[in-house]
Image 1 (tube, rainbow, N blue to C red):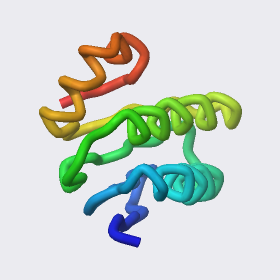
Image 2 (cartoon, rainbow, N blue to C red; image 1 turned 30 degrees about the vertical axis):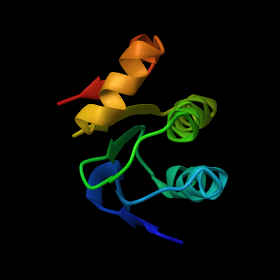
Image 3 (cartoon, helix red, strand yellow; image 1 turned 90 degrees about the vertical axis):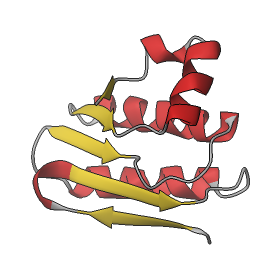
Image 4 (cartoon, rainbow, N blue to C red; image 1 turned 180 degrees about the vertical axis):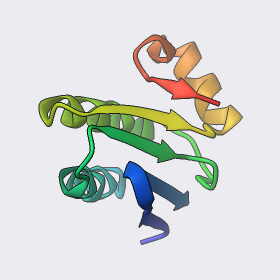
Length: 101
């Protein structure tokens, strides 16, 4: 596993490292577990230290948003790497992925 997850205060989840295509489902499952453990209704996912970008990561991010909604939580992404943001924009997903700076 080359990615790392950290859970912080006030619903913060940090994703760092490199996520391979094969690891994307595992990352999603682990983030879903962290979302379930957050007591508040807001989840912030910090992507600043994520070192790569591909469609499987975008798919996992969409899965995080969907899972948070099923738990009546709002979720947004901060510090989205430029390459990942550009990929989301090219694919039209920038309109459904809640990114904040």
